[in-house]
Image 1 (cartoon, rainbow, N blue to C red):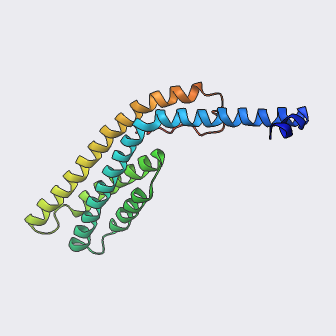
Image 2 (cartoon, rainbow, N blue to C red):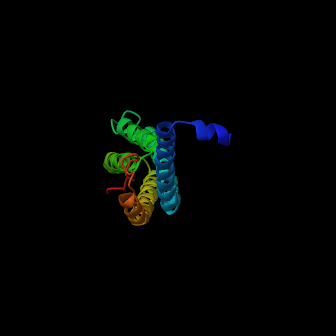
Length: 173
């Protein structure tokens, strides 16, 4: 093997060495960025858990709205907002879907006010309070995520091969 390496033309050996160095630098940069993202990854998981719970509670609101006022035009936008929130997987997508769900819930509050019995009104208030509580938890967790991303952004800015990887995305609320 050593004999074959010695017989290799110098230009090919230099080319192989340059490729190995570039691959090593790129891999090292990716590993450094992944280590920096470790803390923010757990927080992003918490954000998605809170959005899933919020979507579930909004689904209960849809069931109540369908029972109280089956032909109300507010039901379709509410279902759409829930589907968008469940499908969102990026910070910008989660933010937009969460805002759409907030608007749809407020419209449902207005549309369903005064419909049904006193027990239905209490149920509506409880569901809307739970949905608002989850929104507060999302906001709190998003702040933690964005704070953790400051360190990740610093590491990303210092990488010589940052053009290969996308910059980490923050939540904009």
